[in-house]
Image 1 (cartoon, helix red, strand yellow):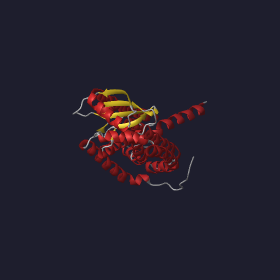
Image 2 (cartoon, rainbow, N blue to C red):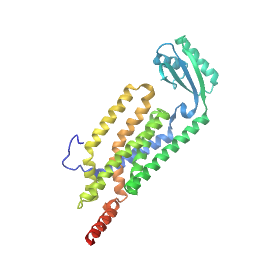
Image 3 (tube, helix red, strand yellow):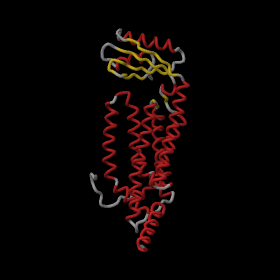
Image 4 (cartoon, helix red, strand yellow):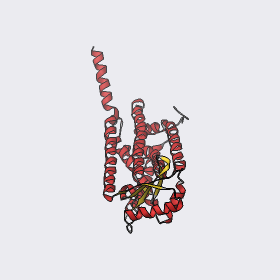
Length: 315
């Protein structure tokens, strides 16, 4: 499906050095902010207290959040849990108070705002659990990257696998850099968004790489630069349609999804925007830098076709 057709190929690869330089600078800045400012880990990773409260009527989330803010817990997360009457409150660790004292203080603040509130449960998330989540999350990220590399190496060629991994890591590090610079809360939902971005970005790279391989077969007299420029130009319409619809959906979550989905959708938005850029203007120049050519992709296929023709001729 094409929304529009571009008759003349856009010379994307002529800007390869410029885009690679921009990517390198943004990557270095992201690493710098990660190293100097670090991530603002949420309760999932640092540990803390989880409280479940219930109301006989629909809970006023904003009123609950203000009540918690008044006692100095501005980093607390307040969200509906199951129904509109049940609320889950995640409280960060407060060194001066024990879990019992912290829950009692929050309980008093909530009852002062609404005497009908009922405390259902109070649980503690220890720092050890947070460390395990961090390790498991990092392991999941590595497994995804390894799986992507293996898939692309089998489907295309190792040069495309390496270029796609570099492009995907570029997206991941830039998302983390944004969260480090603005000190947005990094939670399990953000980690889930990063894993989703990895899959989304590699899908875009596969589409472009498929067209590159097809062009190497069709455009016999064209050079590598012309083949890649044509591949990107021919998939541009599909890219615009796909990303516009995806960003519309993610944007609705960002603006209307509330606090629960805010950072999840924010990470997705950043990842998708940079994913468009990296899958075209990072992965392809890197593949060229690694020396991708017609022989790398279709040399074996041409040999098999030649052997098949010879067998038919002998028969």
